[in-house]
Image (cartoon, rainbow, N blue to C red):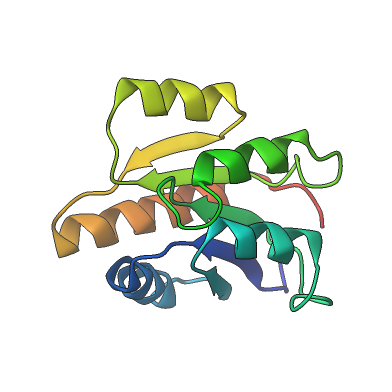
Length: 144
């Protein structure tokens, strides 16, 4: 990944969480480009490069909320991991739910990790920085 920006697709309907995530990633040592969609339907269109997302760069990582309008995050995850072309993209579940049923379902559908969003601003930034460090500095992501 040296020399090219890391592409992240943030699938989040809460404007406050979008802003917090963008702010935390903006402070990155690496060049991170964030695309944001606010519902599951847009997420699938983005990932499949369908209108209005024709020509977008495929993300290196997806940050996915579970509770989304139109198409639920669980359905997005299920569709992504069932798609031969998309299944290699790591999907990090970043959601408010701490329910065991949601955790089990997300991993059962092929989620790569599950993180419950913290309530406080500083804790949220710490979590996003930890995601960044692990997924962008430790892990070798698949090529686009």
